[in-house]
Length: 212
Image (cartoon, helix red, strand yellow):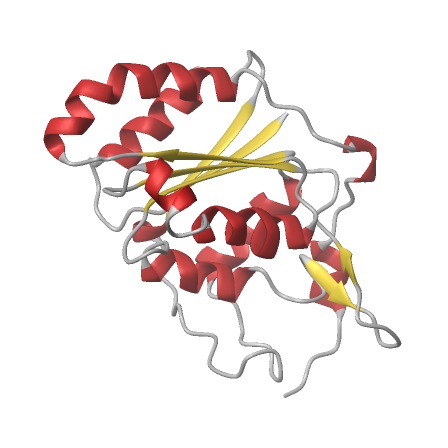
């Protein structure tokens, strides 16, 4: 099983990194792991022309695209800031999850092909907001977007999301042992919904003619 782990925290040595370390250690024996920290990538996080013109990938993004295409399971960890992921991680999604690679709209109807089918995903989000407040007061927008409008939209299934909080220093110290156990359980129970549907998508995407 090929596992791609993306650390979306802009700073090193933070809680997100610790939780992803825990996840990696708990993976089944034989898992092949590729680990990337967004803060270490050299890229422009702005999709300046939208989908009208394909912006050339920087070398770091091109290598990450190869890892995403090859993975059986994706793991993304980040802190929730102002109801969303940090800006660099959002920019990475904008630049990397392109039509023709991770999804493809139909020409004659409003539907689309989920080109990342056969792969599964886990998302670990830390937050100062108590998870029950995120769920009942705000309606779980972060969880619903990542599960439905980002990863699920592209075909990852199942998409499991773990929202952990409050994560201020005092609360995190009390809860960390329990969070580590939940994350280890998550890492030890990976199952793709339809692994037989996984196909390499990057070669065709790179061969496509694009606007100058």
